[in-house]
Image 1 (cartoon, rainbow, N blue to C red):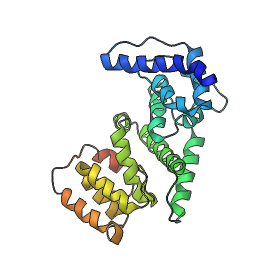
Image 2: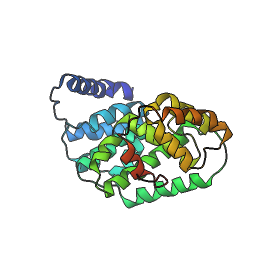
Image 3: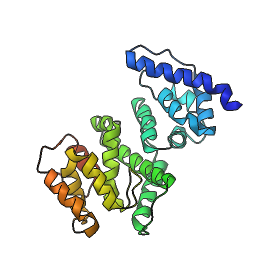
Image 4: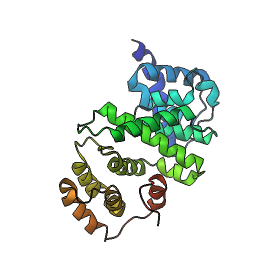
Length: 253
């Protein structure tokens, strides 16, 4: 009954925002009361999280962040809880960045600690969807923080692109030893996905595999050889500087 009560309000707004974006129409401003209620419902009912992100993070919607994200745990913790995937969380990070906020130290340290623990854990097992989502969110937060501290706003805008974010998360898999950005059981299968779906960036995948000393891995080898051939063809170098900045393991040109 509770979800039925609010379903109409939130999803009418959601579809009107989608329509406004499609036809380049200015969206009406929404009250702080409505937006706070939207956050509460999205926290209680996961099916509202995507709609909440679309509404709360719309670049044309102007409201006071502090009045809407005003819980004791802080706006970044709320964003972490609302952004159940890295793709969803990036909208909130972009929203806060536009308003001049930086990621708090406690969240950075927590994410860095989690990533260190994952690197140390050599247990070979397929990650659950929730485990993978948590790792990818940690990666996004640490990458976003690095670019924010370097004042590379143009790179932050690139991270807001879903395909670019997906490529970066998949490349990060080699540094962690676990396939991310897809539900594959191992790095060999992930390498096939990078070959098939990110061919214009094959040169980056080749460099990452070599940097992580996986180029002689027999399971990865077949796709790696194919990637080397693709890397000799027309390639997209638009993400190179961003990738080299994010990954210390790669040598900058």
